[in-house]
Length: 240
Image (cartoon, rainbow, N blue to C red; front, side, top):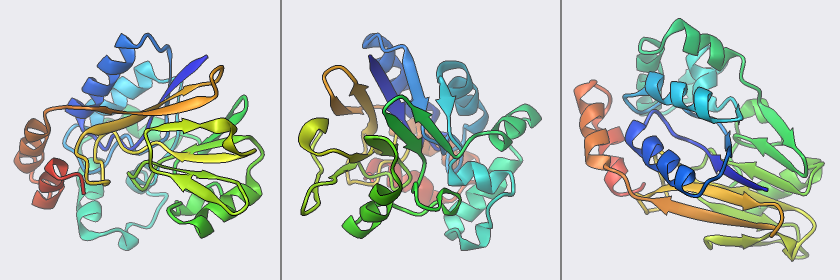
């Protein structure tokens, strides 16, 4: 079975539509969202509605938690704080209710989904180093952990010593446990402005990280027109 996994859409409608079109062309029926559907971008309501309609499941990301008041935004950067406050006033009561009921974790057969870290998931910590990965391997109960949050695609293997890859194709039989960061649909930060999502083939035991072009200039112009911080528009063209 094949699964498409998306994360960190961040209210970027153009990126989400481009990725959904690619997934549809690949004839993948099961779409899983790892959180942060909203925040930063100018189309939170539209993106939330598409994800509610198209995805089998969506997790709560730190931006959903911030918008519903479950996370202290005083620790956010000023850009993120401004965007969270703006988003609260630009989504419907229905979407607010939806965000409030999203799970932090989901187990799907032989893999687990989380937005940030499986270790203390409510803290939304990042998994970017070997030390971070080690904490997560210790609490993993399935073979594979898919996550997002850092906007940087990366996979860790529970080998001795621990290994990792930044490559676009991840073979899952290299170790007994694997952690895969699937990158970001709406705000990549790996110096590649193309949207990123993952496809997991459970029969071939492989994950592919797929990049998709979208009109980031249109998205940036929407951010500026909405009065959101200019930095959120500028970063889309440089992938940082």
